[in-house]
Length: 201
Image (cartoon, rainbow, N blue to C red; front, side, top):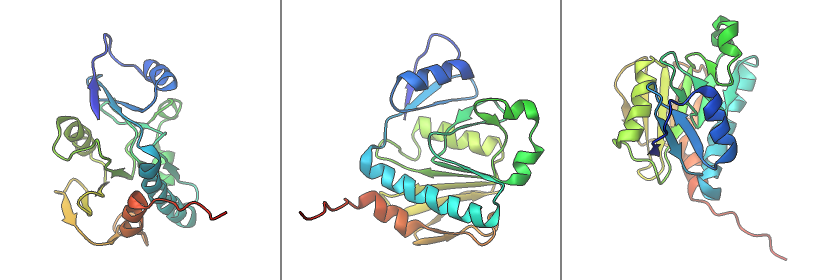
């Protein structure tokens, strides 16, 4: 993740224009600073796919009218920052409580029920840019923040503004906020390191 120095404040319209014409994922802090994350590559996207598929499968079974956004989606938080978590869960109740004007935005303005971040090679916990993103989640009181770190095979989970809890388990029970949902962390980390085999001729 890198800070890009832009001559003007980044509006939603400008963010969409930049995203359409440049590779990578672009996000905006509350003060209008533009951040860019390079493409994850083929192998990195396998982990993202596993994460998204698990959350989506749970949502479809438990909250059919809710929403799960992939990394290409995005949200606007109350402080006007715009982020694209690797996976975002928005319950049907949260969506129904949102104002119509906030849902008319390209990046809905609301506080999602859960965000999931899968760290890539370019991410470092403690780096200035990554700290800005996580701090924004906490400042806006997101109920559930899950950070997955494939390099160290660990998860960092913050529930209801409490301190992050570090774990090295292959499964993560998130039932306190997503009833019945157990995240298969091992499958995500395995996908991050697996290279698909070519079919034999």
